[in-house]
Length: 203
Image: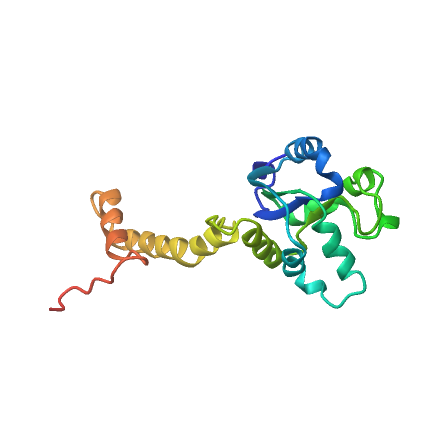
């Protein structure tokens, strides 16, 4: 399935990490990623220091397992992936499974490759803002081109294009020009909401 299958849903980015305990299963996991309709926009093999892991998981600082988490995440190489597809964040989280091992669905990646709450094989961003921060952390030199959401062009069309076109068609009906297409084209140029306003007779 791809974004075209869900025309009403936004395309998103999320960060996926294949953690040290699942590093030798990278190819299997990446193959599943592609079969689930994700595009892999960026890929990087990386090994973080404990300090870098502490920075990456800063929101967990102070929790009981923080030291174990940073030690585990810095224990070996990992693969960081920027994934994209419609509703990528929620869909990737549903594929990898919840944090607690007792709640892992049998068909989740964590159930297949993980062994405990800590050593759970894969990571997924929790939210849009977390994804943006984590992708920037793992790929600091990458340009983050934003995807236009479906709502943005629809809002523009509703607010400007439809309103302007309706007004132009109303004026067209009033004037009844000999060549309506040329008249309407000229009217739209003069009344383009994105262009400079033209005031006739003003010096």
